[in-house]
Amino acid sequence: MREVVLPLHGGALLHDADLPEAAEPRWFDREHWLKSGAVGLETSGRGSVLIVDRGREAWVLRHYRRGGLVARFVEDHYLWLGRDRTRAFREWRLLATLSGRGLPVPKPVAAAVRRAGPIYTADIITVYLPGTRKLSAYIAAGEVPESAWLEAGRVVAALHNHGVDHPDLTAHNLLLDEQGKVFVVDFDNAFSRPPGRWQEAGLRRLQRSLRKVALETGTEFNAAAWRALEDAYRSARAGKERAV
Image (cartoon, rainbow, N blue to C red; front, side, top):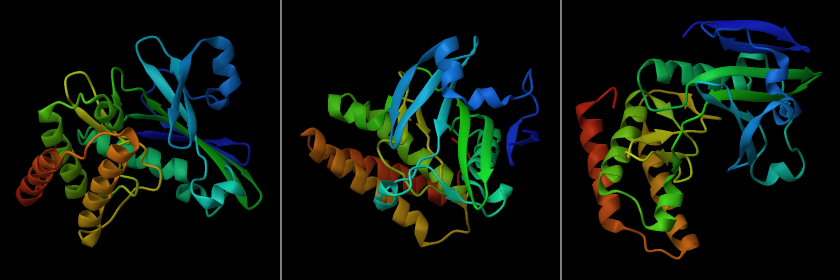
Protein backbone atom coordinates (compact mmCIF):
# COMPACT_ATOMS: atom_id res chain seq x y z
CA MET A 1 0.00 0.00 0.00
CA ARG A 2 1.41 3.38 -1.01
CA GLU A 3 0.92 6.35 1.27
CA VAL A 4 0.51 10.09 0.88
CA VAL A 5 1.24 12.55 3.72
CA LEU A 6 -0.29 16.04 3.74
CA PRO A 7 0.10 18.93 6.23
CA LEU A 8 -2.76 19.45 8.68
CA HIS A 9 -3.07 22.04 11.49
CA GLY A 10 0.52 21.73 12.62
CA GLY A 11 0.29 17.99 12.28
CA ALA A 12 -0.30 15.78 9.28
CA LEU A 13 -2.82 13.67 7.38
CA LEU A 14 -1.88 10.25 6.01
CA HIS A 15 -3.90 8.30 3.46
CA ASP A 16 -3.76 5.47 0.98
CA ALA A 17 -2.44 6.73 -2.34
CA ASP A 18 -4.83 4.43 -4.20
CA LEU A 19 -7.98 6.03 -2.82
CA PRO A 20 -10.23 7.36 -5.60
CA GLU A 21 -10.01 10.80 -3.98
CA ALA A 22 -7.56 12.58 -1.68
CA ALA A 23 -8.37 12.50 2.03
CA GLU A 24 -9.85 15.67 3.50
CA PRO A 25 -9.72 17.10 7.04
CA ARG A 26 -13.51 16.88 7.28
CA TRP A 27 -13.28 13.10 7.10
CA PHE A 28 -12.12 13.25 10.72
CA ASP A 29 -14.94 15.54 11.86
CA ARG A 30 -17.70 13.52 13.54
CA GLU A 31 -20.21 16.31 13.05
CA HIS A 32 -19.61 16.27 9.29
CA TRP A 33 -20.60 12.61 9.09
CA LEU A 34 -23.51 12.92 11.51
CA LYS A 35 -24.98 15.64 9.33
CA SER A 36 -24.35 13.89 6.03
CA GLY A 37 -25.37 10.29 6.62
CA ALA A 38 -23.58 8.38 9.37
CA VAL A 39 -24.57 4.73 9.54
CA GLY A 40 -24.37 4.66 13.31
CA LEU A 41 -22.33 4.38 16.46
CA GLU A 42 -20.68 1.31 17.86
CA THR A 43 -19.20 0.91 21.33
CA SER A 44 -15.48 0.24 21.49
CA GLY A 45 -13.13 -0.28 24.41
CA ARG A 46 -12.63 3.47 24.89
CA GLY A 47 -15.84 5.24 24.04
CA SER A 48 -17.51 4.85 20.67
CA VAL A 49 -16.59 4.74 17.01
CA LEU A 50 -18.51 6.23 14.11
CA ILE A 51 -19.48 3.99 11.19
CA VAL A 52 -20.05 5.94 8.00
CA ASP A 53 -21.51 4.89 4.68
CA ARG A 54 -19.23 5.27 1.66
CA GLY A 55 -21.33 3.51 -0.95
CA ARG A 56 -19.50 0.30 -1.80
CA GLU A 57 -18.07 0.04 1.71
CA ALA A 58 -18.37 1.54 5.16
CA TRP A 59 -15.66 3.19 7.20
CA VAL A 60 -14.92 3.26 10.91
CA LEU A 61 -13.77 6.58 12.36
CA ARG A 62 -12.03 6.18 15.72
CA HIS A 63 -10.67 8.96 17.92
CA TYR A 64 -7.70 8.00 20.08
CA ARG A 65 -8.51 8.12 23.78
CA ARG A 66 -6.54 7.30 26.86
CA GLY A 67 -7.22 4.13 28.81
CA GLY A 68 -6.65 3.10 32.40
CA LEU A 69 -6.15 5.47 35.33
CA VAL A 70 -4.53 8.19 33.24
CA ALA A 71 -7.83 8.63 31.35
CA ARG A 72 -9.29 10.25 34.47
CA PHE A 73 -6.92 13.17 34.03
CA VAL A 74 -6.05 13.22 30.31
CA GLU A 75 -8.78 12.12 27.90
CA ASP A 76 -7.22 12.26 24.45
CA HIS A 77 -3.92 14.17 24.51
CA TYR A 78 -0.56 12.55 23.81
CA LEU A 79 3.02 13.81 23.98
CA TRP A 80 4.40 14.86 20.59
CA LEU A 81 7.59 12.93 19.79
CA GLY A 82 7.48 13.41 16.05
CA ARG A 83 4.96 12.71 13.33
CA ASP A 84 6.09 9.17 12.60
CA ARG A 85 5.86 8.19 16.28
CA THR A 86 2.25 9.23 16.71
CA ARG A 87 -0.24 6.47 17.50
CA ALA A 88 -2.31 7.08 14.38
CA PHE A 89 0.62 6.92 11.96
CA ARG A 90 2.12 3.84 13.62
CA GLU A 91 -1.20 1.97 13.62
CA TRP A 92 -2.02 2.97 10.02
CA ARG A 93 1.34 1.73 8.77
CA LEU A 94 1.18 -1.52 10.74
CA LEU A 95 -2.31 -2.27 9.42
CA ALA A 96 -1.17 -1.43 5.89
CA THR A 97 1.66 -3.94 6.21
CA LEU A 98 -0.46 -6.69 7.75
CA SER A 99 -3.41 -6.29 5.38
CA GLY A 100 -0.93 -6.31 2.48
CA ARG A 101 0.32 -9.66 3.71
CA GLY A 102 -3.18 -11.08 3.77
CA LEU A 103 -3.74 -11.12 7.52
CA PRO A 104 -7.33 -10.69 8.75
CA VAL A 105 -7.12 -7.11 10.03
CA PRO A 106 -9.00 -3.95 9.04
CA LYS A 107 -7.64 -2.21 5.97
CA PRO A 108 -6.49 1.33 6.84
CA VAL A 109 -7.91 4.29 4.92
CA ALA A 110 -6.49 7.45 6.49
CA ALA A 111 -5.07 8.86 9.71
CA ALA A 112 -4.75 12.38 11.09
CA VAL A 113 -2.78 14.02 13.89
CA ARG A 114 -3.26 17.60 15.10
CA ARG A 115 -0.44 19.16 17.07
CA ALA A 116 -0.70 21.92 19.66
CA GLY A 117 2.73 22.62 21.07
CA PRO A 118 4.05 19.56 22.93
CA ILE A 119 0.82 17.55 22.62
CA TYR A 120 -1.36 16.13 19.87
CA THR A 121 -4.70 14.43 19.25
CA ALA A 122 -5.28 11.76 16.63
CA ASP A 123 -7.87 9.84 14.61
CA ILE A 124 -7.80 6.88 12.27
CA ILE A 125 -10.20 5.61 9.61
CA THR A 126 -10.34 1.92 8.65
CA VAL A 127 -12.62 -0.14 6.44
CA TYR A 128 -15.57 -1.56 8.36
CA LEU A 129 -15.76 -5.35 8.67
CA PRO A 130 -19.42 -6.08 7.87
CA GLY A 131 -21.30 -8.87 9.58
CA THR A 132 -18.83 -9.16 12.44
CA ARG A 133 -19.34 -9.28 16.19
CA LYS A 134 -16.94 -9.46 19.09
CA LEU A 135 -15.94 -12.92 20.27
CA SER A 136 -17.08 -11.81 23.73
CA ALA A 137 -20.62 -11.27 22.36
CA TYR A 138 -20.66 -14.76 20.84
CA ILE A 139 -19.50 -16.20 24.16
CA ALA A 140 -22.22 -14.37 26.07
CA ALA A 141 -24.84 -15.78 23.68
CA GLY A 142 -23.33 -19.27 23.72
CA GLU A 143 -22.95 -19.20 19.95
CA VAL A 144 -19.22 -19.67 19.29
CA PRO A 145 -18.74 -22.20 16.45
CA GLU A 146 -16.29 -24.95 17.35
CA SER A 147 -14.21 -24.15 14.28
CA ALA A 148 -13.84 -20.53 15.42
CA TRP A 149 -11.64 -21.56 18.34
CA LEU A 150 -9.22 -23.26 15.95
CA GLU A 151 -9.32 -20.27 13.61
CA ALA A 152 -8.63 -17.89 16.50
CA GLY A 153 -5.58 -19.90 17.50
CA ARG A 154 -4.21 -19.84 13.95
CA VAL A 155 -4.87 -16.10 13.57
CA VAL A 156 -3.07 -15.22 16.80
CA ALA A 157 -0.18 -17.47 15.74
CA ALA A 158 -0.01 -15.72 12.37
CA LEU A 159 0.31 -12.34 14.08
CA HIS A 160 3.04 -13.66 16.35
CA ASN A 161 4.83 -15.31 13.44
CA HIS A 162 4.88 -11.90 11.77
CA GLY A 163 6.41 -10.44 14.92
CA VAL A 164 3.35 -8.39 15.95
CA ASP A 165 2.89 -7.79 19.67
CA HIS A 166 -0.75 -6.82 20.27
CA PRO A 167 -0.85 -5.47 23.85
CA ASP A 168 -4.64 -5.73 24.10
CA LEU A 169 -5.26 -9.20 22.71
CA THR A 170 -8.65 -9.90 24.26
CA ALA A 171 -12.01 -11.45 23.47
CA HIS A 172 -13.27 -7.93 22.69
CA ASN A 173 -10.69 -7.39 19.96
CA LEU A 174 -11.24 -10.70 18.17
CA LEU A 175 -14.19 -10.44 15.79
CA LEU A 176 -16.13 -13.26 14.12
CA ASP A 177 -18.22 -13.02 10.98
CA GLU A 178 -21.18 -15.21 10.09
CA GLN A 179 -18.92 -17.75 8.37
CA GLY A 180 -16.73 -18.12 11.46
CA LYS A 181 -13.80 -16.15 10.04
CA VAL A 182 -11.75 -14.42 12.76
CA PHE A 183 -10.40 -10.86 12.55
CA VAL A 184 -8.19 -8.89 14.94
CA VAL A 185 -8.83 -5.19 15.56
CA ASP A 186 -7.60 -2.26 17.68
CA PHE A 187 -3.88 -2.17 16.94
CA ASP A 188 -3.35 0.99 18.97
CA ASN A 189 0.00 0.45 20.72
CA ALA A 190 0.73 -2.75 18.78
CA PHE A 191 4.21 -2.98 17.29
CA SER A 192 6.67 -5.32 15.62
CA ARG A 193 9.46 -6.95 17.60
CA PRO A 194 11.78 -9.99 17.51
CA PRO A 195 10.54 -13.35 18.88
CA GLY A 196 10.53 -13.61 22.67
CA ARG A 197 8.53 -14.23 25.82
CA TRP A 198 5.97 -11.63 24.75
CA GLN A 199 4.38 -14.21 22.43
CA GLU A 200 3.55 -16.56 25.30
CA ALA A 201 2.47 -13.57 27.39
CA GLY A 202 0.07 -12.54 24.63
CA LEU A 203 -1.52 -15.97 24.58
CA ARG A 204 -1.96 -15.91 28.36
CA ARG A 205 -3.49 -12.44 28.12
CA LEU A 206 -6.13 -13.83 25.79
CA GLN A 207 -6.83 -16.70 28.17
CA ARG A 208 -7.32 -14.29 31.07
CA SER A 209 -9.69 -12.25 28.93
CA LEU A 210 -11.78 -15.32 28.10
CA ARG A 211 -12.02 -16.20 31.80
CA LYS A 212 -13.05 -12.63 32.62
CA VAL A 213 -15.74 -12.61 29.93
CA ALA A 214 -17.13 -15.91 31.27
CA LEU A 215 -17.26 -14.43 34.77
CA GLU A 216 -18.89 -11.18 33.65
CA THR A 217 -21.50 -12.88 31.47
CA GLY A 218 -22.38 -15.67 33.88
CA THR A 219 -21.19 -18.33 31.47
CA GLU A 220 -18.63 -21.04 32.11
CA PHE A 221 -15.05 -20.84 30.90
CA ASN A 222 -14.80 -23.42 28.11
CA ALA A 223 -11.62 -25.30 28.96
CA ALA A 224 -11.98 -27.69 26.02
CA ALA A 225 -12.37 -24.78 23.61
CA TRP A 226 -9.30 -23.13 25.06
CA ARG A 227 -7.26 -26.32 24.60
CA ALA A 228 -8.38 -26.44 20.97
CA LEU A 229 -7.36 -22.80 20.47
CA GLU A 230 -4.01 -23.33 22.17
CA ASP A 231 -3.28 -26.51 20.20
CA ALA A 232 -4.05 -24.72 16.93
CA TYR A 233 -1.85 -21.82 18.01
CA ARG A 234 1.12 -24.01 18.90
CA SER A 235 0.78 -26.06 15.74
CA ALA A 236 0.78 -22.93 13.60
CA ARG A 237 3.67 -21.45 15.56
CA ALA A 238 5.70 -24.64 15.17
CA GLY A 239 5.03 -24.66 11.44
CA LYS A 240 5.80 -20.92 11.25
CA GLU A 241 2.73 -20.31 9.10
CA ARG A 242 3.05 -16.77 7.77
CA ALA A 243 -0.57 -16.27 6.79
CA VAL A 244 -4.04 -17.65 7.48
